[in-house]
Image: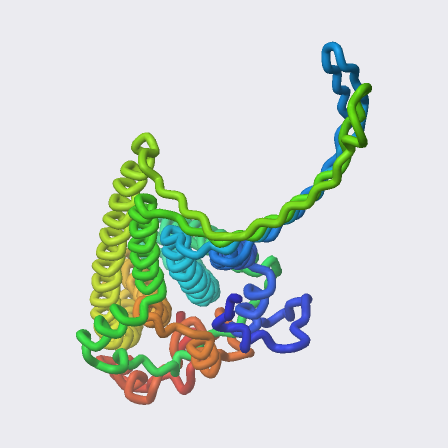
Length: 479
């Protein structure tokens, strides 16, 4: 019987109606209940596990019953004839005593059953990753849309400012055209971002068969830490020992080895014990015969019989060759799987490790880009910078915000991928992430991290009056 790894996370009373603001665990529970791929994988695993009782049945006694009736017409030249009815009943019991091929088929079926269970567990584990990727891709798309809206608003204000300066003769017509081009580009980017968000929500709908209006957002205070343990070789060793797909491939080797032994057993004799009972009644009455020829006979026999295959037309030899190739295939597939697991584990460990510093660097880059924009805007107002410089500084700021959100969501997803490669990914990882989800997260307000006091001071560097924005809202409004 299958043992679902994550059945414990199915909470009682999960509603079929998704709330307006949905958290990660609710989405995952909906996926467990409604995901078609998971249901298909479960049915496939259960079907494959039926090979075990089927193989076991070939080692157990085989009992059969039979009965029949026939109407016969007998004619004998010079004697006469008769029409009569015969009835027969029979029963048999056969117990295999020595059938090596069936024994090895049974051992192979046990390995195949364990392989099916592990592959289903891997599918369950993969659902965790799919749900997480879809969920955080929605958050990423939401933040990108908020960034695109802010960028569009900023370019619109810049266009209006350029028009006002042109109207009073403080700037050239070129500045207005440059600003309008920037605004049109930002508007197109906003429309694309909206489409990307809709597409991201559709991925969640595919996994859960539910529609969502909005999701809990990820706090910018999420700890960005290196993998634990902070040792690449330990992660590789754990993955080599626990990766579910790799473990399944090793059971495939065991099954192929027993399959080869079963094929070779085709050369061995077969020994069965048997008990048979037959009852026949009915017969003919022929003219001129003496007495009654109608008979009623019973026959019971029991014993042991052996069958020795001498020549099967090359069938057994061909089956041995086929099983040998199947074993080689299973061994090579397992080796290829091991190499992929090691490669993925190493790459993901290095990616997550580098992401720790990159997230912090991207966050600091936002501060620097904002300070650069403020300085460029001031230069534009006093005539030392032109509108192209301002537009480029704005583009750089919003590009930096998008890069920051991209890398922090990549960090979360890559962390989960690393745990999947190591075979340790579980719903507990989603519960841990859920602790950092914010129910009232508003992308339009929260798409950039709240600046620290130190970051505010950095933004004020180079100003004659070092007055940093008093709070986050003022910082966002300056966009």
